[in-house]
Image 1 (spheres, rainbow, N blue to C red):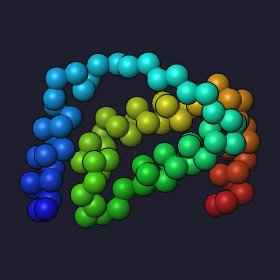
Image 2 (tube, rainbow, N blue to C red; image 1 turned 135 degrees about the vertical axis):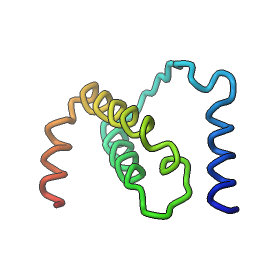
Image 3 (spheres, rainbow, N blue to C red; image 1 turned 90 degrees about the vertical axis):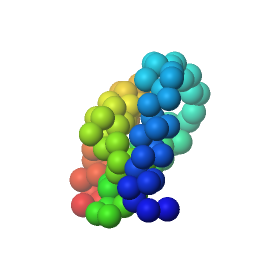
Image 4 (cartoon, rainbow, N blue to C red; image 1 turned 45 degrees about the vertical axis):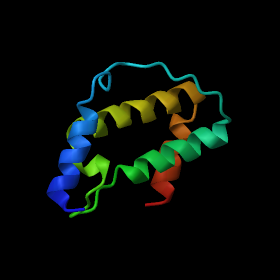
Length: 91
């Protein structure tokens, strides 16, 4: 699908009624899975030039909200320090 058309489809989906409503998500996962989840979200936030995925189209709002979710997960699991050290080691 052409980039412009795909962008219009994503924008239409995101503008649908109820999409801006705040929902509560209750997850019960191990710390190991929480760390994997945070890493997967971070890798997903790296947008490649010319990409036509949902995050590249809505990057302004979504990136900040995703970073807040990452921070919340790390705080609630007590893994902030470990995560920071792992990021430092893998640079």
